[in-house]
Image 1 (cartoon, rainbow, N blue to C red):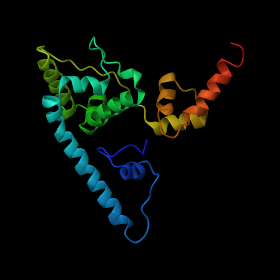
Image 2: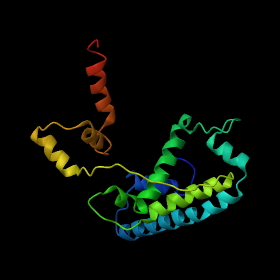
Image 3: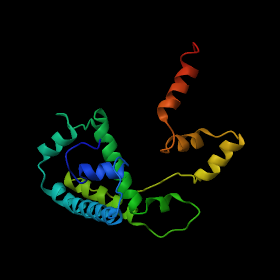
Length: 192
């Protein structure tokens, strides 16, 4: 993952962000500052390139990029790394533009940039193929499950719902391979 060619992130950026590389010593603070600034600039400039890609990258090149078949269907799920990249790019952009404010029912928020950006993106994508997108309705069903309270329930021996377990499974602190082994032992090796 960290050894791919340089792109929006350099190999060194990837190593630093994933913790494979650390800056230590007398100039470490300045090096970390510089690395963060360089990453911000490249991400910003990469985003500014998307209008050029959207308007000018040939359709055939876009199809090759996403592995489109002759019938136009995009089998992105056949390239797991690409699918994960697209998913996380969307999540990064939506999260960074405030989409979670729409998910929190406890706050009465004004429209957030994420909603406007998503709506405008759908309008623009439709126009590209001559489709008039009349309206976009965004409905999100979400529940705020604070991780700290889930950990407290877990520690107290309280039963967690499947939704609560899923939230914990999706955290970086859980070894999903170990969980899979437990499930395999419970469901397959017991002769079920």
